[in-house]
Length: 510
Ligand SMILES: Cc1ncc(COP(=O)(O)O)c(C=O)c1O
Image (cartoon, rainbow, N blue to C red; front, side, top):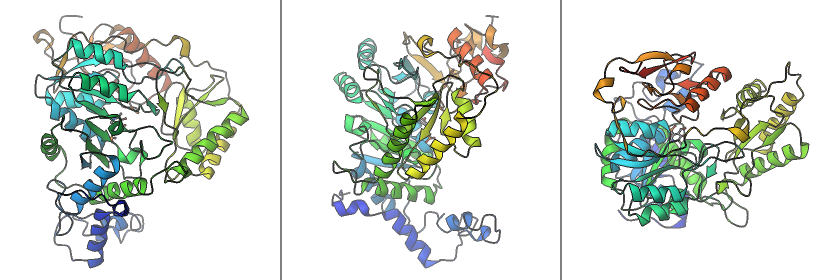
């Protein structure tokens, strides 16, 4: 397949065009899907205008519409244009989010019994990938930002040491940026990993927009990553579940990736999602940002900047997480804004709820921050809306002053030590010794310290397991769970929704 490098090509949207052509023909449908080009929705006024409209384009592998699993036409061309735009050797469209990309990326380098180096604060899909591949990980503790308490990636120095200790590792898996938009020195990490002759896999779920404007951080591919997963639906305008897997070099076998994606992705992938990937690539990459100040992100960047400046000027209770010059990370995404109450009267969770009541939905919260995400299409008027909402919240009479328990100066890191040997997984979690076989038992969280969790406990968002099945419960994780309980945080995977007890594999230990 020959590459299309002409700049005018970046404006093209081959899959969008193919679907428009298909719709223009208005063919009679004698095939799936059963809504028959949206006809099923059009008599119901509740859904006619939206499901009815999308239904017109929710097609299947018809002539001219190509096949995601064996692309040779419009999808192949759309993927090729994405590879050109993002700078990959090959790009795969994903219809199951970065989740499916992580499953494939880790599966492609690990057979059963193999292991990778992985930062402990990886998304649950990375742990699930180890479980499905029956593979292992040497978990590395991330760096922790002193100012905010937020975790980033392991340092290049630690990665270097661990690669020397574990020369059998198949790859290094890093999440960059973190949910809050903090990036590590990925160039240095790539250098270290390549010095040891290993591939660098990057979960760039939150950085699909990176590298597309000089005001945005560099992308993982620009830094030298060998395979990269991006949630195009998060920071670029693709529909939910739309994501991409980019292959950066020959260190990762794209044929294995293709085979795995053929197993993991639906045999009926959604055309609206795929078309939105084609659209998002064209919208973000054509006329990309330049030093002269043009580009598709400039309005959103301006809105975020405007919000920051106005909030600073007011010098009220609400502050923005800023990157300190000596911060343990290299850049902060200007489109991510973490707001917190400098008087420590509201937790991030409470702030998120109050913003919701004021008509502004934030992305997520932790104990201290509410995270607000700006995008390509955010405007100054959105920023005004948010400023007004914060002003109203700031002037409310809160019944009682409460201290946020989490003082940034004395947070205990959840993860402080690297595993001393690879931790191997099977479908249940960490492979457990025979004496722990049998049914798990429920134990009060405060009494569970030192025991092995039998559950994947995942505060969501951000979707990073606090505990995975088979992991030993530390006093730090137990107290984090107690804090989640008192804050009313959403926690997936734990069977006791009141967060009072946890299932453990105790065998004869209790
Ligand atoms: C770091 C990280 N990786 C992967 C994912 C999964 O992405 P998706 O929701 O696109 O499947 C998420 C989702 O929030 C994430 O935060």
